Image 1: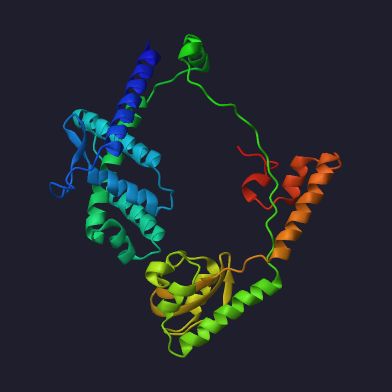
Image 2: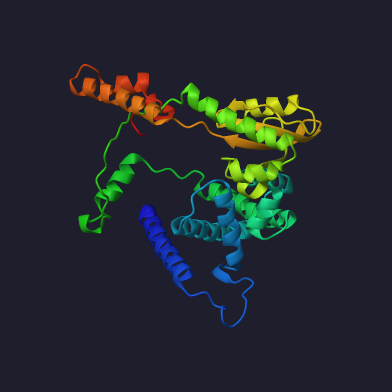
Length: 348
């Protein structure tokens, strides 16, 4: 009985959220002709409301963490906000609270992640949100407080609830076949990846390009202008290669080692990291923090490098088809994809 009731609640919740999402994202934007709408209520749960600005702040945070944007993602965030409000309303009845220390700690961690996703540039983050850092932090803090309360309330509600595999099986066996959702066929896929190796000639070409840019900087050209025009770091388009102040451990080891080796104003020679080749200028250092700007050039495989990788794969394929080699063993021994090679090339 409990599981049947839970299923009805989940179905009703899904339909409600789907309907709300459909209304919210397909309805016309009011105020375009009649005036500017500062904010508006998009959902109400008990005495708690969900504002459009809350959804937008959450969505901007989601994007700033490097996630791809989509209407499905926005709708899922909307769903989560409503569920949080539901849990917060229940928590108010049950007197469930969280400490300011816990809220502040989580807020600082989330702000650091969002800022890192914006290239550690507070200015870029403020432009993306259209608000000051202080406003972003205050709004985020309230959202995190609600999330922590919702998590604590959910934990209390589900504490002690146990469902055995046999109960689950009996429940689903009672559902009529014509009421079951359709799921497309599943496939099991394995892969062997061969990444084209960059030749020494291609690396030399990247370093020479950076040496040329370094010489132009030393002659007086703007580092920021050259970074915006030449750097392959996407954030350079809006920050001119300026990474702001960062502490130890924020950057890859090669970058950090070079930053602490330079004197203020000095421009490094080209050096290599996992992202490619860099030149770096140290702008300032204060204790364990430093302020730098850089230009990134990635050495790319030549046509011959790519062709050589293809030949390797063709050779492996031939030997696997003729059963001279086992696919899983080849994947474990030769695949360049660390995420799947340990499992014989399979996705799990």
